[in-house]
Amino acid sequence: MGTKLIERGITRYDIEAQGTFGYMMRISRGGEHTNEFFSDKKYSGKRKALAASRARYSQLLSQLPPPKTTKGIRTHRNQSGVVGVHLSVCESTYGKAYSSYCASWKTRSGARNKISFSFKKYTKKTAWELACIARELETTDRAKVERILRSRSQKKSAKVQNGSSANSRAKTKNRAKTKTTKSALKKRSQRS
Image (tube, rainbow, N blue to C red; front, side):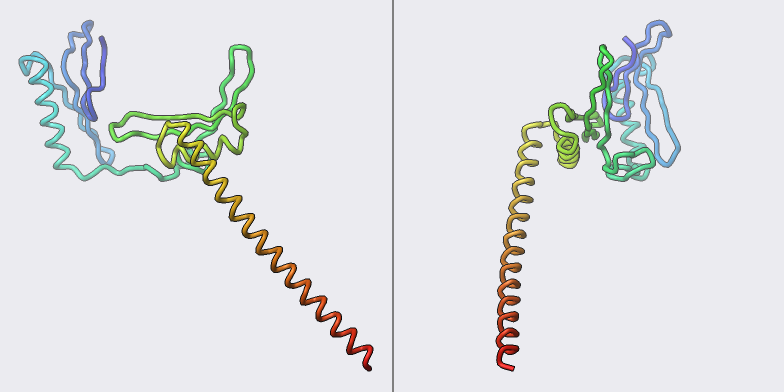
């Protein structure tokens, strides 16, 4: 059967060729790693071996400092500028390249989630914005991400329209002042 992750820090080993049956408990903090194996034979069965590995993991967890997380921290490997968003280029069996922006993150249980937005379906800019929103919300719900992008775009265009109408009112006001000033100067020069 091989190995199977049971829960965070505990992996099940069933390797017949080596006669290995049991649970491996792993925990690491500050560059130091602790690995302990709890065999079914030594603990008289799977349940007791699992209980012992869980108890040991809990014991070490309470003694060690909390883990340092890199969540939200940009590393040297990041090339997109946004944590958890990267460019993905895949080649089809016919040799054609397909590009997309992919958002990925880890769930609380430690599983990895991801969602991608292709340049073909969306534009490059839209795919980027959708991937950034998906990463920000940590959701694979495509419809929700698209709704949020539409909502943000509408708010942006409303601000631009309000700003441009305010600018046009200010320009009109300035033109009126300029005309008044020019006409006043003309009248003065005619009187003199």
